Image (cartoon, rainbow, N blue to C red; front, side, top):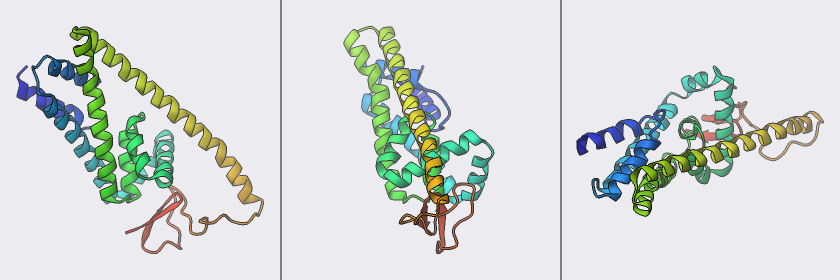
Length: 231
């Protein structure tokens, strides 16, 4: 395959969020270790195109917040994922914007949740850039280091793909455990609210979640979950 065509294929498979390309990234890492491709350029193309895709999703969700929320409500699993993601972005901020990239469906969920929440653009770009640079280095590096160590491209590709699957499985387990913990905590919080106890600080003016309306106490802002972000 022509080198320019290969670089173009990297862009086409990295920019959209739904195209699996782990095997391709490991393979180009193997080619780079053999001197057939320029490693820094590969990392720039992979990381840059992934960041561009994240930014486009963020801007679309920020611009068309209501249609995005309507799309989320159509599927209970999708809605639960976005609610969970938005809650953690509100709670942890930039560190979670970075970390969510490595969870299953986290690239899409993180970008859409950040856009609907109107998370600050500069902070989002910084977090997404760190996440995509780390992801690109890790994904391509598996093939590069594996080939340089074993000297056998097929072994390196197999090891790289296996490690990628293992990391994805670990991320899915962490996400599943965290969501189960959140579901267990919600009935307890509702029970405390129904008991007539004193409202916690920050409860006043709270929105009604992804599917609800903004609180009347929120001045010219967007209320999603427990966060009101000024426009």
